[in-house]
Each structure stands twice: as structure tokens, then as C-alpha cells.
Length: 368
Image: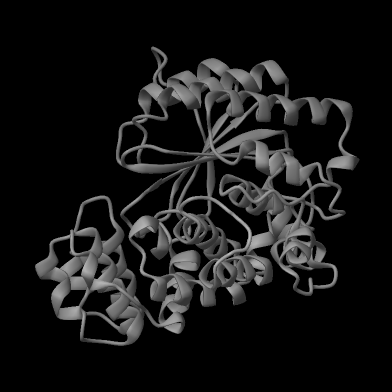
């Protein structure tokens, strides 16, 4: 199927080629070699990245920042859940100085957090393999300035601060980093970058300071439970939600997990997000939403909703999700998983690819 899609138009060919290069299975070099010199620069870059994954590190010693930015934008918008960012296919320890500088150039002007944060997390260890020491080398200074200048790197400030701390550079925020490097910091940096991310959240988002005590208890239970299970992003997102940004935020809770085949994203909603987006009306009961996406395919995720208004019911729902996380993917039979959801709560829905949301009920004997 991939070979057939590679004969399509340029955009479809690029998505298909990157799916081959970055998918779950290590690609066959013979399927990529013909694209190294063919097509536009993003196509050539995708092919070279695939060759690196196939064991040919010399296939990519430097790159065109514009080609990388174009490919990264496609991945961030078309395949935001299913495939990794291009830099995540590379080993930071094996990056050449030319490659680091080219990627730093992309980072410095990136406004998209899906592009910027993976670059931050790869470039800092690449440039600072032994940790931060004064004075930084010219290459290290280039990378640190790119981190400071990148609007997308600071959409979630806690993530950027944590990445810097891992390399031994303790800063409080973006302006603190700018002061440490002796460069001018952008005016109102955090608010501007957050506003770019949350421009569409007013209709379906909520402000933490406006929540009732019962709603806050529900949010805290969600965060504590998934964080205790070891899901990614849960605590960082909660810190962002409670930081007093002044923006309506959606979803109010986030947790992510990756198994061998799939990416799982569990979110907490206090009302029906789709109704809110369509009409602006915030109606419906609280629910946990699970999206399951294959790593290697360009397909819409499978979505499940389990309604849980009380903290105890929410904990039971999240427990059921976590028990099944090692094996869930878009193709696995979900009967046992749904059975556990029905045991935890009275109402379960499935989200279809066409946007419809259907309530499902257990079969006799307990299966869905």
C-alpha cells in the first residue's frame, strides 16, 4: 500500500514516505534510496531520515532548515498523534555540529510547540553532552539562544525549564534564561506564546480558578491517578492549568502513554467538548476521553468516552484504562477493555471517524 501511495501527488507522497521512514517497522533501505535525490527537499530529507533509522548514519550529516521546517509542519499537523517528529528519529549523541546548528536555526523561529519541544529535548543533550558549564562553547550558545528565542519552546514553560535542568542549567523561566545568556527577552513572552496555542480554547475550555470544589477534586483525582500510574505529561499539564494564565484551557487534564504499537492520550473534560466547539454551550457530564492511535499509520484515532462525575468513579475508569494500556491499539478487540469500563461507570461512548458519538451498551454476559 505504501508503494502505491508513493506514486500519488506531492503532499500525499511526502506523508506516505515519512510514514515509511518513521513507522513502527525499521524501513527497507531499497524503498528509500530512490527518493534521496528525487522530489523536493522535504522528500529527500524524509528518505535520508529513514536511511538513518535503517542503520546508515552517514545519510544525514547536515540538512536544509527550510526542508526540515516544512517536513516537521506536515508531521505536526497531519500526523500529530501517530508519528514522531523528525528529530526524534535521530540520536543526539551522533549529531554532527552542522546538523545541530541547522536544527537550532529551525528551533529559534518555531512557534509550534509540537515542533519546538522535541527539538529542545534533542538539541540540549546533543550540544551539552557533559552538562552545562560556564562559559558555553559557540555551538552550545547557538542552541541555548535558539531555545530562548523560540516561541514554541515556551508554550508549556515547565517542559522547557525541565529540559534545561536535565543538562544542569537551572532557570526559572524564559526571561531568566535570556538574562543568563545576556540577550534581550521578548516582551510578555509567556502570555503571547500561550495565547497563540489557546486562541481556540475559549469555546470549549475552562479556567481553573472558576471551578467548583467538586470539579477541582475531580481534576486532582485525575492528575494524581494517572501520575501515579506513570503516564506522561500529566503533572506538567496540571502545573500549566493551575498557573493562573487567565485563559480558558482545554482539556483540563492530560495524560499520555506509548506502548509498542500505539499512542494513547487520556484527557479529562467537564462537559461535551464537541457541543461546546459547535455551539458554545457547555453542556453534559464530566468524562474521561481515551484516544488510541497507531504509531505508523495516517488514520484517525479510535476514541472512547467514559462518564464519571464522582472522584471514586473516575479513579475506577482510569484504573481500567491503565490496566489495558500495554495491549491497546486501533486493531485489537476491545471487548475486555469495554467490559472493564462498563464495570467502572454507567455510560460509555465511542467516537467514530465521521465525528459522530454513539453510546454503546454491554452485551448480555457483560461484554460490549
